[in-house]
Image (cartoon, rainbow, N blue to C red; front, top):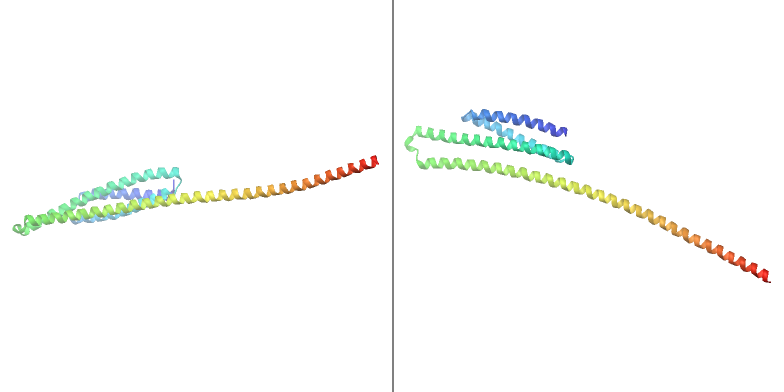
Length: 220
């Protein structure tokens, strides 16, 4: 296994365990203490997402057999991170609702007569808008991560295609060299055959001439 991947994995596991403990601790708090704890957890989630991306990039750069194993582990870590995000979202929602109730209570104690149904509705709508904004931010971040993963995958595929083309080019170059050498050999053979034809022709001519001379002197 890649030592770089193992380093990221160790950091992520330690960070994930710490975030789980902080979530448990935050569920027992309220008010500003809970808000501060949730802020610390969100910072940790950003760091965890960064480690997940680094592990993903490292895993995709390895051999196919090792790559498949590491990506399977990575899916488990992503699932674990999504569970942590869901827990933080639940705690944040509880904290917002508690803050809204506290604000309503304080307003009622200050001036119970001034608290109307219209004011309660506006406060509820503000809380809903805040929740929706938080959801949109999380969705945008998730889309960005998915786009980044797709880009990495495309780059890996392009690199593999480039290697294949380079290999094919080398093979064709070798074939061209072999063809060139074969052509030279055939040319040399053709020249030798031509010389041999002339030599044989000359020998035959000499033999014919010798026979003619012999016959001439015998018949004379």
